[in-house]
Amino acid sequence: MYQTPPQYSPAMPYESPRPPRRRLPFALPFVLPLVLFAGLFFGGSYVMSPEPDIEMQPGFAFAEIDGRDVVLAPYERHGVRGMFQMITQDMFQVRLAATDPATGEVLWDTQLSDQLIWEASVLAAGQRYAYLATDSGLFVVELADGSVVAEGDDVEGLGGAFVAARTAYAYDPENRRVLAMNATGGVLAIGLDQVVATPVDAPTAAAWAGRLSVERVPAAPPSSTGVEAGMNPGSTERVGLRQAPGGTPGSVLVRVTADGRVTPVGTTVFHGAQLVVDGVTAVGVATGHVLVEHQRSVNDQGIALSLVSLATGQVTATLPVDSRVDRALVGPDGVTAVAVGDVFAAARGDGRVVTLAVGLADFFGSHQ
Image (tube, rainbow, N blue to C red; front, side, top):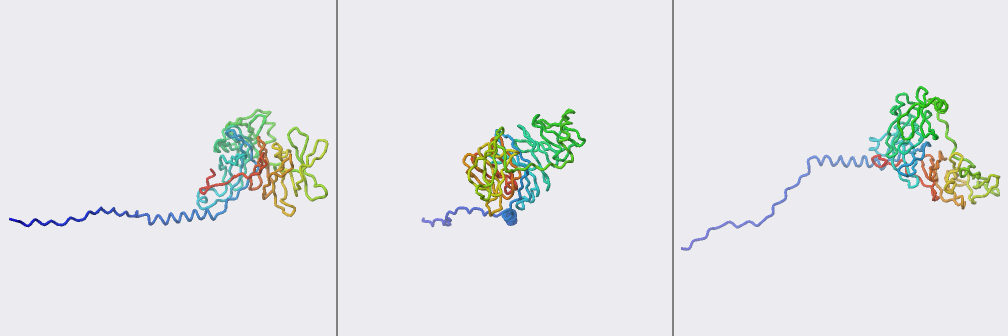
């Protein structure tokens, strides 16, 4: 007998499972505003703040690092840029930068002091260490990375008898050693690439006792400019500035022989001009140039530095600056390093005068 088949509920259509809803972490609504505020606070203050003031100190010197002639330049950095640097950096710094003047590369830049008024001068450099006379005593710096190896009373052999005065330290080039006077008047020596001071013999102590002092104010540095200067060592020929011919205002470059004969070097007229010198020698001569400090024009009292070719008399480069030259130093390869207020520049053998990027720092205040 026919029976009615059983009834089944219709099958539901296939549905893929819904992905679980992701909920934002509970703290995110509170953290996000803080992150935005920090970005605006630190980033905005950095963008709106001026660069710190940079002032070069005259006590720089050349050294060799990894086969490169570099200049060790102490400088002052006053101020910070942005709130992050204000929190993490000293407001006043004296730093030492190792810069390759041929390429402009800064190899390292290290802080020496956080005092407002503080000076350092590079006395000498060996293969491993550089030695600085500072207002806090002697500093020994590693040339490879700029780290301070010893300073003040940490210098073995000086200890608590060290003197916090630049005049208590000097370099003896004949014997390749740094000499130091301690608080009792004793004279000690540190050989290049050594870090231990040892007493010298009586004749040496007597010879250097008058050159070192625990109280004397450092002598004023010699002038970095002049109207006439020597050329190559051993040469009797000189280079100088003379009144422009025909009563024209200004000066022109000339060569002066031993018997007084004068030969013009080009026809460029400079106003308020001086030759930049290193000691008694005109800088740049080793590369066939001379560097002239002068007014920018007869009506502009601003200062400029011009590099002039001795062969052609042509001005190969001019760099406007804000003050007179503080110091110039010729390196082993003939490149001249020049400190002019907040500018540190190099006069190169290719006829260019370029500024060196000393004192630059990133957002975090890092100089590397």
